[in-house]
Length: 293
Image (tube, rainbow, N blue to C red; front, side):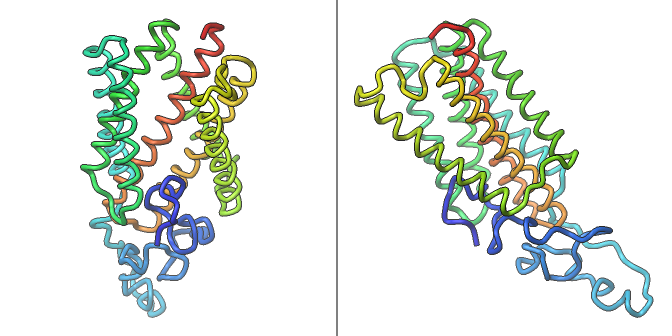
């Protein structure tokens, strides 16, 4: 059963007991045996649960057999689906940059593409299974949005998109490094605290947007080009890094516990949403530090 929140449920890896593996990490020496502690066991996702040697053969001295892995998610599956999804974003962005000159029309198209991407993302988030068509469609429209706004930023702050890409890569690499080094432990408590902060941040930004739209904060409010705007941008990037740790944990747990192969699309979907978040915030931060707005 997924979380009722479509944005912060991490797109398909959450189960009845929270995030997969947060409260039931495999014991040292190998994956969990049987159904206890395995969020995928009741869906037929645990190859060990169907291995007679794991249940009784080992007690009789029988030699162990390799678990059946057909149809289970692997790291190669995640990498391939992520490459397809992110590649679609890049292609959409490049085409939008090359074919759409900076104008009010292209700006309107960017807003429309962002809205379509948001709707597709929400539909996929509420679905119980992955839909490659929805995920690729989301990536395509998100790419158009990123291509237009990147060109707009580049027309004022030359080189800003390139710097934002490098910044996104740096944040992703650093987050992966600290995660793999064990400096960050993704537990249920860690997830709850982080998600609470993220939800509060989104709510505050929504209120700030309304204040800007209605002229109460004409300078952008919390999203101004001053020091306050920079602080908010850095906080947003840190929240993006937090989401990356959840993505990494879910991918790791999905592979360990034998998640269905189709969940690799959900992993790619989650990673794409997080990387888009970080890139957009990095783009704004580069513009602020460039000293012009």
